Image (cartoon, rainbow, N blue to C red; front, side, top):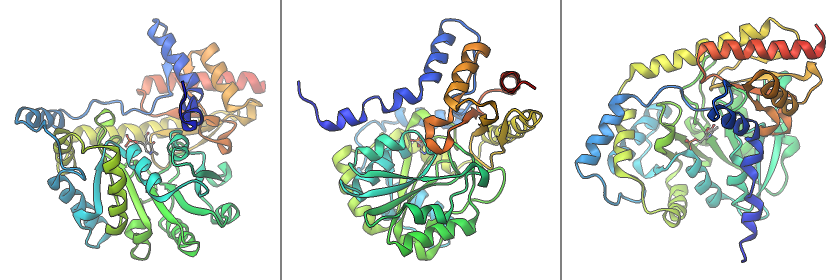
Length: 392
Ligand SMILES: Cc1ncc(COP(=O)(O)O)c(C=O)c1O
């Protein structure tokens, strides 16, 4: 049978990248004791009060079709939140709900890009970007982030990547997988670059609330860049709600009109009970989440301290997010080979840096979502293997 050429382009994009994790997962399921430092899922359940709110909503009959662009009470809550953050009036017409920021990005790419266009994407990047962008038929132009600068996006690298076909810059700050948090000044310079070259700016703010060092800045909050910026965000990481698929996009009313034309073609609204729970999550405080943030921060320090004791690896202390990038180049191995050997010989699962782009070659990504004991064991085994390789 015949299938669209797109399926051939998208096929296998994800699986190869996650091969180390998949092997570790299978071995664990078979009963082996594997230290899992590869996954990026919050380690706590969704706060019970949010689950209760969704259950209450389901029981009260919030089980029918929802309003296409999102439930008005949630859109109003989001509009208020972004008005407070930006100091400008953001109207509910500037917001729309999506099943996760992943879906919001898919719809935005369909709205802003087409065949022949280019999108600038800092490399390394969140692994799903490639498939999402390819589905729009636009081309990805990688903008290398350098380990030597803490993986902070540099304007010179953007200047080298720009062409007459560039239409969009995809900014992810705080950054997955490197944990880099751009200074407000750098965000402004990046936005200024976009203005100079008349680019749209998609601002992926999935990790806005997970910052240990520095301050969050968004081009949307800077008046002169707001109209060319589209935010994507969700409660996945901030509220331990990854499986709920609750996210949104925020942009100008004009862009929203185009985006909604696309989202209406993609889906027929999203679950009202999940939107009720999202609104509840955004308007209440949860001590479990304070603890979760504190856990990530403590573990980031723990990994940095433990791995800092060896010269066989170099650790990039994360400024935000839930991962730490570890430079294993002193061992002479690629990140890919290091991760496979670490799993095969030391029963520790990490992600090869290469899974996130060429600029992260020679690195492995360690997740902070494992408990302290596993993180300690994992780091000890990383050092044992690395030191064995460099002969210290
Ligand atoms: C940088 C980044 N953006 C977007 C997403 C998608 O998150 P969700 O669709 O759950 O909102 C993730 C998930 O890991 C991510 O790391």
